Length: 254
Ligand SMILES: NC(=O)c1ccc[n+]([C@@H]2O[C@H](COP(=O)([O-])OP(=O)(O)OC[C@H]3O[C@@H](n4cnc5c(N)ncnc54)[C@H](O)[C@@H]3O)[C@@H](O)[C@H]2O)c1
Image (cartoon, rainbow, N blue to C red):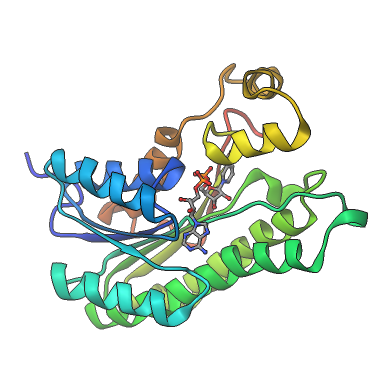
């Protein structure tokens, strides 16, 4: 049986660990050739070795999504190696949580740059390959925090902004066979949520438990849960699903 992403190339930002790695793995398991960029070089080397051992066609490049030239060069290289650029997943992200009165310019700018400028950079670089090929799937990783979250004025704003960006890409690029959609995860167990636990001074186990108590599905999310939703949007057959935001949070809120 051929995989659903056979002959497709996927480009995943921030894909060396966590949710991005889960997404890259699922797309690769479906037959996609996968390009991953990240600023974490150690994790990049690990994911490259792991994926190669599993027989996946993978290209890993150290690149910062905030720097257009680095993103563009990595994407060109992925295209040179694999022959197309079909799926873009804007997943790279950081948190710089703080209550508003303590939030610094740097907290604000860093989060806006990585999530918004980063997604803008990658989408801008990808669209030229996609438009030329009259095919593309762009999936942006938003968050339930887009609806507002204490201590995350910067992050909530960026994740809400990504939803507007997604809908605008859908409108502009639809006629070229390109769809743009967003997945908005709730609480997912990754290094990012571990960071949150240490910032608020509780153990990760306690944070997971407190989160699960509020999740109707009765469990926390795993990277695979987000990868499943991304795979739906990335599928060729989802061509009439465009400009949507899918909350993947084990319930309607959080
Ligand atoms: N974990 C959650 O509960 C959760 C919930 C909602 C949304 N999200 C979003 O999902 C995405 C993945 O998060 P995660 O939980 O896997 O976190 P993570 O910290 O494990 O992974 C994020 C990855 O992005 C990379 N990255 C950061 N800045 C970068 C840059 N400038 N250029 C390239 N790569 C960069 C990091 O090195 C890391 O590998 C993020 O956009 C995050 O905001 C996470």
